[in-house]
Image (tube, rainbow, N blue to C red):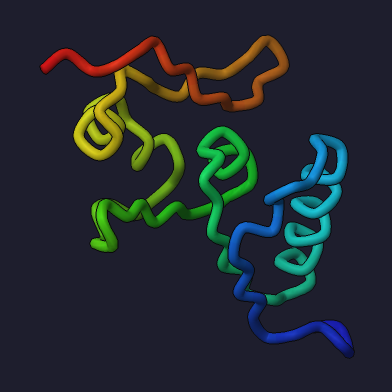
Amino acid sequence: MLAGTPDWLLVDEPLASLDLAHQFDVLALLRAAAANGAGVAVILHDLTLAARVADTIALLDQGRLTKTGAPEAVLTPETLAGVFGVDAGLERDAGGLMQLVVRGRAAL
């Protein structure tokens, strides 16, 4: 680890109130810290951004851990329907970046 790099960064909603460009800047800084050996735990409500930058996602439902793993394994249509009540899933855009596509409310 580089001198001055913390062992861990615990960050709660660091993107709140930031414009889009600055959100990407903050995420790049967090990824750089991870690349330099720091553990980085970030709380995000934007699932698309989480899917794009996280190696591992821990999904909570009413404060309880529901599922952990790679974004593709956690943010499945079944899990998103069960936790959020939406018909949604991850898809890759033309550039290969993941994005969450929400089609509407999940069928009851």
